[in-house]
Length: 225
Image 1: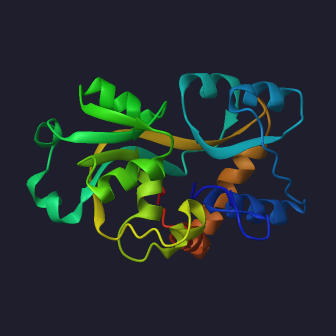
Image 2: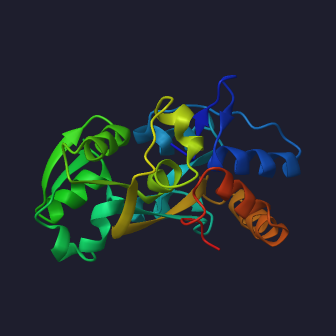
């Protein structure tokens, strides 16, 4: 996941992690990354075992009602990936509806495949779905736009530590966004930290560091300018 992952030194890095470290430095605190059960994020926030939920969190009505949220800083979408040589033949949802798809089991990609009535196979990870397309077992995959930006096409050598070495997806491309969602950072209700993070984002955008971090992790197409 280009938002957060551990490097070879067991340090958390990624678009979200790097942004969080910059905000913490300006606040004069040291950031501590805590892995939680995602379903318990509100409980963890309210009992103060964490202070911020910052990990590609989709802005839903539930999140809006229960947390003090930042503005959207990043957009994600479910995007169709296929071999670059096939892309010219597919430009809209109608054109792809007869393809065989690979998706990650239980993911938003699987939900979109169901909604559209696509013929699909569920795999255990998004990288497995991409391998299906690369090997020709499936004609297309549906994965996150953020993952697509980080893992496929030219100049995506960053993907190595995420999906294992020597996996080259430069022969794939993504062509069509099927659904869109906004990512926000969540703080406790009533906290002024969300407003502070918004101000920080504005500062990082004006000094160029926001896009610099996004480009480092291949998510520049998804960030809110």
